Image (cartoon, rainbow, N blue to C red; front, side, top):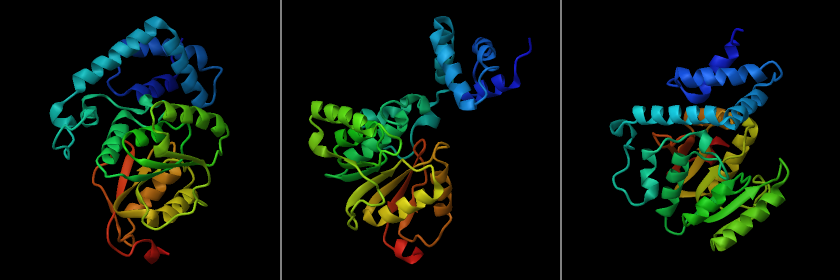
Length: 281
C-alpha cells in the first residue's frame, strides 16, 4: 500500500527537517490508519498526535529522536542571545533549552518567550502591565510572579471563562499573588484608559485584522514613555501578523520603535518621543 503524500509533508513540517527515517516510518503507519476517515487538517493533526503518543514504543522513538536532534544541532555561538550580558536568574538561561509551540500549556507562550517576558517585567520597578486576552490565565500568573501589577482582560468570546477564572483565582491565592492581578471579564475596546498608564501591554487575542488595529490604536496611547507594546505574531493570529507588518512599514508612527530581534513569536514595540497615534488619526 502506498503512503499518502500528505503524510510525509505533514509530519516533516510537524517535527522539523532533521526528523529521522526510523521515526518517520513509525509515524506513517499511524497516519495511514486515520487519514482515510479524517478530511480536515486540524482533526487529522490532533488524531495523529493522539495516536502517536498513545503507543508507548512509538512515543519513545519520537521523543528519543527529537531529543537527540536538538542536542546534535545545539550550538553555543548561535544560541547565546546577542543582547544578554549577564546571568541574573533562571530566566536568563532559557536559551540552553529547545523551545516551541509544543511548550504551550496554561500559558500560550513558548518557553523562551515566557522567560523573556518574565525577565523584562522583573527588571522594572513596580510595573503596571495589561494583558489583552487571558484564556486560562497562565500568562497572568507569570506576569504577577515577575512582579507586575496586572490588569488582565478577557471578553469570554469563546465561553467558559468564568470557570477558568475561578481556577486562576485559586492559583493566585495559593501563591499569594491575588493582590497583583486584577482579573476582569471586560472588552478591551471599552475598558476605561488613561494616557501613559501602563509599562507594558501584551496583545494576544486578535485573529481579526480590523480588531487588531482597533485594539492597538486604543491601547498605544496608554503605554508609558519607554514602555513596550508586545505583539504575538503567530499563524494562529493572522490579523495581528498582517497589522504588525503594515505597522513596521508605516513611517507616520513616529513614537514607535520596533526592537530588532523578536523573541520567539513575540515582537516588541517601544514607546519613544514623537507624534504617534494623533498624527495617524
